Image (cartoon, rainbow, N blue to C red; front, side, top):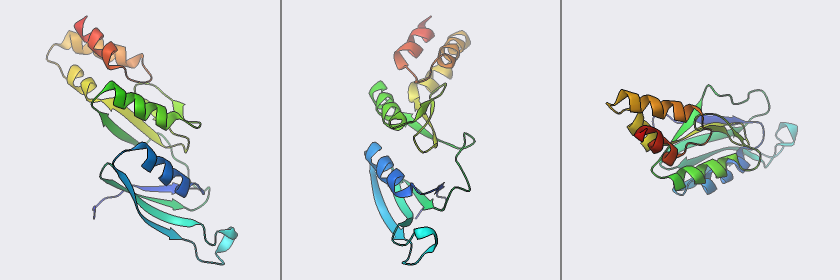
Length: 158
């Protein structure tokens, strides 16, 4: 069991979100589902109360608890990608159904949760000892929504 687990508060979409996230990430699974007991307030009886699921080895807990709190950009999930195909997959899957693209590899999914879809190449190129090339990579990245590895490499090359 993980010592620290992200806990996600949903109005009433926890079950839908869990199924969506486990469909997006290939190494994922639902671990546990807990339902509200019969007679629970607000007609919640029988509906999902909370669930535990795993995405790429990271455990999450989700709760259906009403509209008191919403997600914001202060917290995001950082997804490391090896290839452009992987970047493209996560970007298109997580923006589907009403998600929103943002700048520099950031997006919000249809539930309002923020994600960063980042190729490992970005860190490698920006960490170069060639400061001029690294600066060109930074400038190129600042113009992007979804990160494009080929454009980063072209910027690096000058």
